[in-house]
Image 1 (cartoon, helix red, strand yellow):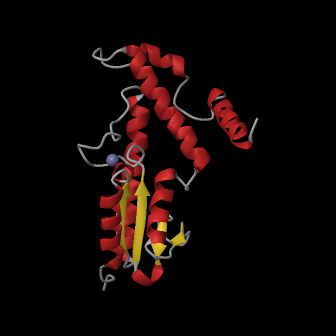
Image 2 (image 1 turned 60 degrees about the horizontal axis):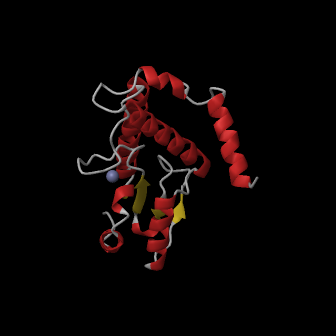
Length: 183
Ligand SMILES: [Zn+2]
């Protein structure tokens, strides 16, 4: 068993012993959907979201989308600091001399506010749990942005679903970083 498999097993055993909410998977069978969906499909969806939560906890802050953005910005010649603890929300990338910050957000966890986003929909099972959790994330993000702006930082949010179009993303990053610093 490799290290990462060991970590995953540990995470899964924590799920089994109730370390994480929501409830054990079998409970969903009685509460899935609103009658329009096929039950098995809903169970798959929930378990995929849970898997994603587990994986995001293992991977922590260095997520795949974030690494893509970092590589792109680095290739453009910009240098940055990662996850500064002295700033609200520990921003993903900070460009001190430019007065700019780039945040890379997962569309599900941060609830991308775009009707065309394929990944922002809310789970239909355990609604109270998920709605409370995701609403908290939205409020925390908003508080962090305004705290950063109050301190004079300019913030760009890159959403996970915007990373697939590499050319559009590169243009956006370049435009943001090369624009004049905030006054
Ligand atoms: Zn999105």
